[in-house]
Length: 321
Ligand code: VAH
Image 1 (cartoon, helix red, strand yellow):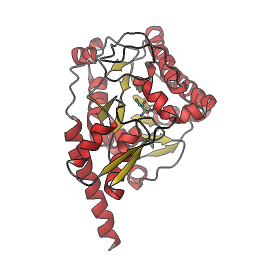
Image 2 (spheres, protein in one colour):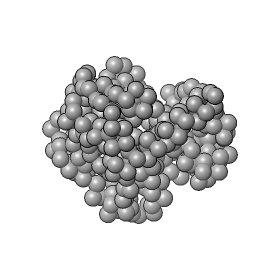
Image 3 (cartoon, helix red, strand yellow):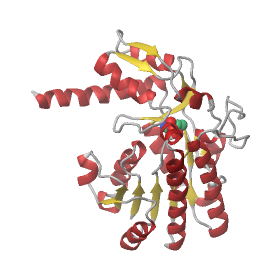
Image 4 (cartoon, protein in one colour):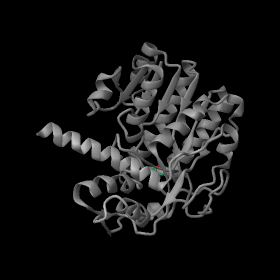
């Protein structure tokens, strides 16, 4: 059995679908603090309400399901955590520690926990950021992810817990909406381009950020989890990367399909967060240790995103007829 905590989030929805495809729906328990809107997520397999800060509830689910693997995804993302620093720290930190403790207590075989490029800060080398380097995050989210990485390493050293992690760049997919991140513009822009032919971007046009298409993020996650333990040399969190682009570049990529699409720029508080993050990531260690290899670049992602979103749009219009 696999327990996915935070199954209703942007990554959680996609990972739960993928895991249910691979292992069978009844083997994947989706858990979140709120019921999913997606009927399929609710009806396609077991769903449990869980606030990961509620230890007795977590224990009860551990007793009931005795999961072999836990994917712990529940967190406040960068922009949201900046507005709710106490909750951001508590959920991101105490939530992780509750899961790590439960995993040791119930001999869970493997734990997955996502970190982020947000662990890097203004003093970090911004181009081809190395696996091991100066890290001085200045966001609540980044501070909690850096601390979380060190806790994962400690639980591995102290208890031998097989906990694995990736420093995700911005993730872009068509099956779920992003939830309060700084890279959310790169998802919103596709929806707005189709709906309104225009998008007001909350980051400046030349804000380069590392990004990854969801199929690549799922591939990296499962490749990491299926790699033999003796190939894993990083127990904090692996750098992984697929591409970097700016709002101007993703707009140009969309224009290849929607020539009358226009973008305007009005940066907000998320600009400071983006400016503290790397422009590109060196993921040589992941490529060496478990043969990481992305498949999607910007244009291939745009072609696939728009094709799926247009399909969904036409299905909705068709159903409405
Ligand atoms: C965020 N999407 O923006 C997340 C991610 C690298 C970005 O951590 O907060």
